[in-house]
Amino acid sequence: MIQGPSKGISQWQADFAAIHKLSIEYVRHIETVFADRLCQAALHRIGASAPFLLGIYGAQGSGKSTLAAYLAKRHASQGLGDCVVLSIDDFYLTKAQRQQLARDVHPLLKTRGVPGTHDIVLLETTLDRLIHFDGPVSIPRFDKLADDRIPANQFDTVSTAPTLVILEGWCVGIQAQSQADLTDSVNHLERVDDLEGIWRNYVNTCLERDYLHLWTRLDELWALLAPGFEVVSDWRTEQEVRLGASCDKPTMTPQEIESFIQHYERLTCSSLQSMPEFADLCLQLDNQRTIIEVTEGKRWCYEC
Image (tube, rainbow, N blue to C red; front, side):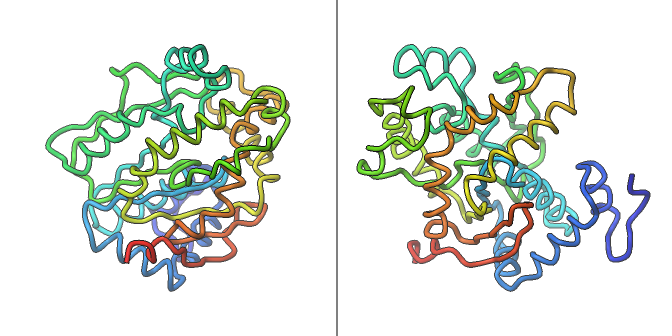
């Protein structure tokens, strides 16, 4: 337990580390990263415009939720106003809605995660209400252990107009694949359960039709880039352990996790290659999720 701020660390940073069960070295490291010239420019853009909509992309377990939470606290500590963090995971379709999709389109759609399993209308409506704030806004939450959205009367409420809204998620900012890229299966799940490509083609269609215009609304997109898909299984396992430690409900076994992440493999691998083309800021990670390099993405070039 951190008793108080150590040298060079303010109280809010010490509290953040304690609440999130992080070493104080996380704070020191992230502030070192933020001191980078490219990060400084990005942070200045955020502070100079309100309301600002920031997207954070990262594979499962990459630390995007922690980064978003830290940015929110940092933004408020600098007197820049309130920040609201939205996880795209909280906008999954309900279990009943996904079960209906599984019956109507393809059985794999009962599993949450891929484009086509989110309530994009609800997400867009929530973003609109936050950005054009005119009163309290309800924020949906999703219970991953129950695999369902919590009841609306238990949603969080935002009562003050935010100056910064962060949307984080594993598929935030990712691009649709070409038809040629959809031809071959990428793993056992696709070879066995999607032999005809119905599922992956549906996912790709939803991504292109319903998500890409949402990404254009982002004022800035940051990408946490994993060193490769092979580390995602380990990261997702660690994430599941933390999830289980926070409650007394059963979590997925390692075998279930391995099967689960195969739903994400195609687009994760694709996005790790393409994201530098579509992000504003790229944060390269090593196997321990430490940011080892900051580079400028090319998204701004397409908007000039």
